[in-house]
Image (cartoon, rainbow, N blue to C red):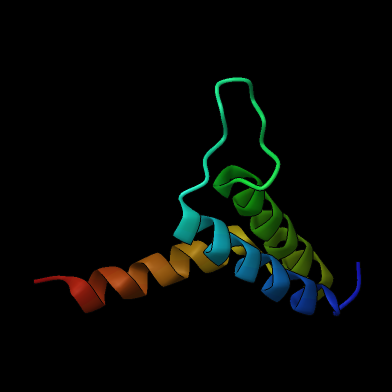
Length: 75
């Protein structure tokens, strides 16, 4: 994977937006092609690949961001 993975992920996010607008879901026959499920997989795949390229600990980042959001949105 290269740092160009970010560009690829932005394309996948666009594809996810499109299937979300159409509300295209996986069928009972497990036909995933062109569905929200497929595009969510693709976006997650590229997010994980980018984290790997940049050496980012996503678990640690997630925990830190959750802490910030808890404080920010606590009422």
